[in-house]
Image 1 (tube, rainbow, N blue to C red):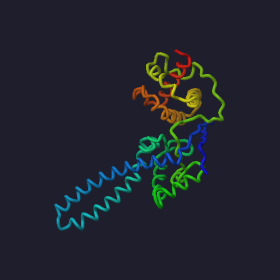
Image 2: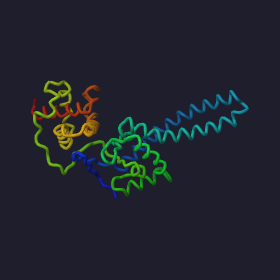
Image 3: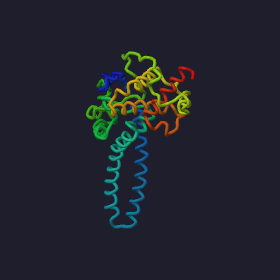
Length: 271
């Protein structure tokens, strides 16, 4: 049966807890993605209809026999391409999100906590064709209901899970000590980005603040790859909560975490 949360421990023994996305929210995201795909398919059909009319006008003797089969082949190919490529492309360029998942505040990640890659996305979405059998994801829904991490067939094969966007520290971890002045010195008190971020820090939970502080304090102990991955993961959960920052200030994940960290310190110290 399902569980509500999954705990992931990195090779550096830093633990993070993700809240699993529920079947209801995943279904609503799928409905939105399906509507977007349907609109795209309608545009393709309109274009193909225009091409078919042109073919019939240009080759009146062959249009009825040649145009219709060609159109049907293109329609079937377009539908298959939309179902597969839509999810793969968005999951790669949006780091595990489709438009439906973004609206629903969800993300696909590797079961080990890493970002989804091309192979994992391709596997989970090719098997979407099996999950959707016999009608609108009945097989996939049953598997997701009875597996502990809410994984459908494609997720099991690809080693992926769908989690809510919010990132939380593992609740069993001890509380971190009060951050010192030496951590995160890159953002100074007079930094305008830090000043702009102060007004949004209050929207973060205590767990999120502890996660940010823990990363800043331990980042020098991490490997370059793990440091980059963790910074990206934390920054992804922060970006939409800090609209006052410029695009340039929010582009570098570690820089964004530092800005939020310093904004938290200043707010705590009333600087």
